[in-house]
Amino acid sequence: MPSWHSLLEDVKVRGSVFDVVRREWLAKLAEYTGRNVIIYYSGWLQKSGIQGLQVNDADKNGLMTVIHGLDRSKGLDLLLHTPGGETAATESIVDYLHAMFGTDIRAVVPQLALSAGTMIACACKEIVMGKQSSLGPVDPQFNGIPAHGIVEEFRRAYQEIKTDPAKIPVWQPVIAKYHPTLIGECEKAIEWSNEMVREWLARGMFAGDPEAAQKINTVLAELADHALTKSHARHLSAEKCRSIGLKVTRLEDAQQYQRTRFVGASCLHPDARRNTGIQDH
Image (cartoon, rainbow, N blue to C red):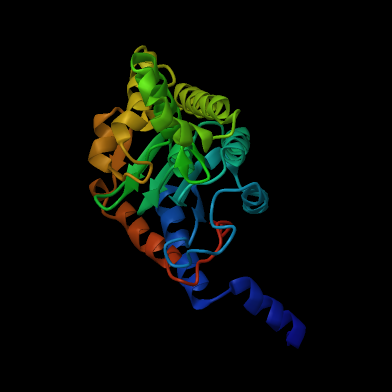
């Protein structure tokens, strides 16, 4: 007969009914693929305004917890649903995942993996997406403002003032709102993000491809160029991602694998609040 304390601990471990259902479907997915499965999700669509919903350094602690004891030879299917987050944390998380599984990682996107989420997906050997799935641009942000946009505005001001000095009074209040070092920081952030994605694509998705350099340049031109993407919030469909050269597998091509949509749906319930809602089988 278990003690009351042990029963409470068991209930705590099992979590809510959504956790129970989610684990059941995760087990079925892992059984079908023969691979480790981890959900890395955020409930930002339902719980906006709560801190900790974006990719951050604390997330690696959750990943370390669930990866401990896994058979790493089975590789990893990483179910992603995130609005993105900190660039430094993203780099650290990807480096850790590569240290654990090498490049034998597939990203599965039931709905949205934006910004830093797209960067994580690009660090995988393959991305599984459905008709409802979207990735997004990877251009870095400063307080919600695209770094590319700040640089473009500064360059436009420079060219217009150089051509017509009479426009100095027009541009002066615009430029004055920027910190003196901001332009340089924006340029470094853009270069940093591009370098990371370039390295991850070369190491994983396009490893051994004789046309890797050209394909990576095409992907970066589409994902990282603010002039092309127009908005950091833009959603890029599976077909769009395939068209720019990313290795995307259609979720609909494997009917049993398509069940990840329902796993994803359970993640998106309002009960899912934290980005570190990570589970494995």
